[in-house]
Image (cartoon, rainbow over all chains, first blue to last red; front, side, top):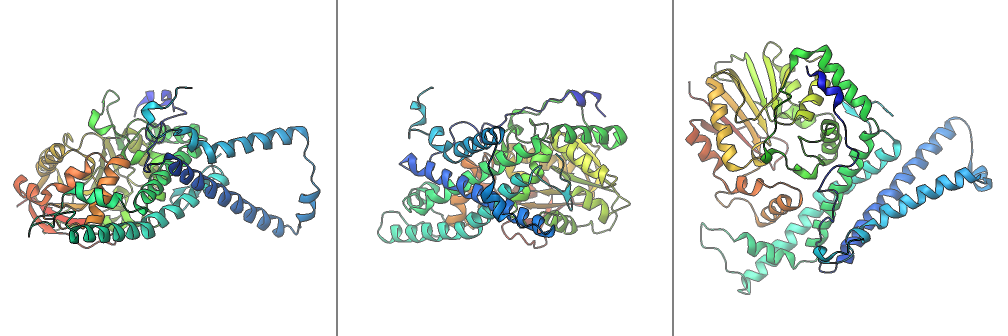
Length: 112
Length: 363
């Protein structure tokens, strides 16, 4: 037993391998970036599709048809801001690869 | 948020994380099960043509092609870098998504591990002053913080490797199979068992189920893994011991164990350390004791085809497996024999990539 264990701090960010510039496999780094983007995009499409499946199952089990209400829904300011933040994060996740590896020789990557 | 478990597996903390990680699992299955054979077959076909044209010299009888020649030819096939990109990106998404999800539940996971230590202090053994040596602190398989440096490493390893196993080890199926296939000493006497490099104790607890009267120990260098293993064992009411120590310096008395079990340990250590670990296992096994080994294959007799050699080399460089090529190239069976073991082929296992060996300390 180690009473010190409660003092262990869990770092938020960790990992040299999953961080940093990553690897380049193609002569044209844009291909690497497009494939990364394609993967993140596919993961996001699936994640949303999966959520819709679950949502529809739950609503159907309660006898609720929401399709018309969805079309008529008008968000308030707070919801608009929250959805914008989520959308921005989505764009960054899908297209972040292009910023991570802007050039083929990453030793010459501009320090911004 | 804690969304509970699926059997023995903790759920990611949000449905969105689970869906994302399930996508990664499906993609990994696609890249490994369907993509790898295509990459290997096309690379090997290109290699055959390059030999025919005299661009690459055919190896002499009993020799094998240089790895550099294989890499050069494979690199010219367009699907090769695509496959490398797919595998690397999937691995990064797997760890990034897993850690991000379980980080949300960090306070509870840490508290659960602390509670297990408090309720069962005699089943976990470590020295808080122990510093893992540098060679153990790589980010093996790209896991952030590796096995030693992320306090949440056990939880992250558990769900991350669920994805790695492409869905066929969600309920520890492979670890159960390997524990069941661990070989007993010929005289049938089993009082103590050691699971060497036990990580989160997925085989350790099964060994206890199989040998309820034996004292069962899991040993690993990673404290985050040991703490998580201990928590899992306590929650599942398994009376096993976990110890943080180096496999080459275990601290057990001579002739202490009847059985030692190791699954994919040796390709994660330098060959020099592999030899030291084998000497240590020989020391802690009693005469007639048996060491069951399930491990990467060796290529010391040129028995691994070019596609697999390319994959193992790629895995070494791009999946942070710094020690595996030297292990694969080593005469592992010969080293086991030199250490003093009698070596036999072990039982066949469902994962055909693995070699299965049984090393017995002569009685």
